Image 1: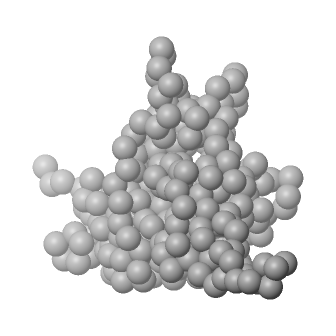
Image 2: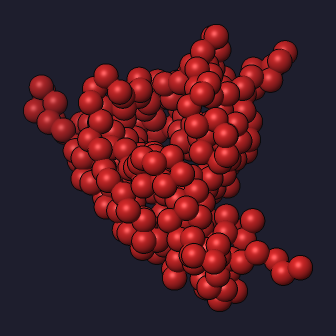
Length: 268
């Protein structure tokens, strides 16, 4: 439990330093918002838990709540970019995942996560995608993880993503690399469905030769996982175990665990 909180508090403090505004999001969300974000809340193979007899579902990621927060809003250009980070509980049915690392912490139905979310102008989204990837690299390198970055092919992209990078860390227990994070540029896919628009600052020249207000533009949205707690714990426990069975706590987390350097078995 201390390791989970240390991961969240450390990553949150690093992101606040980088200008991200922190949020704590609810566990329940309307199914209409889930659909507008590009996810399928109903169906036999859905990853979403639904609350029977209501229009509510358990949220699978804070990205959905943060997108819904700005649904049907018209922002001014001066408000952009919006850089948000949210701590949330995530719920997933893991339908179709039978036999795929179903034991242990790797694939679970509920977990805690710290998610970054950016709303920006279209011409800035690629730059912010690179920034999110760079932040993830810095975080995982600071923890001392051995990881690789994959530029995902189009057939492996979900409906919202225009481009996505996956981060995979070495996990000895699986004897392979396992996904710990991703960073996606959704361009205007979600903002069109959620109606997240902004008003450009500069006026335009109308056909009459007079100045007029520029038309509203759809913003771009991006998301990236800073910490998916269970898989980060797996990576730390399996890669930092010492010969006596104790776990060496990464240095960046030690101040968030009262200076503790090791996780040891309780003595008899």
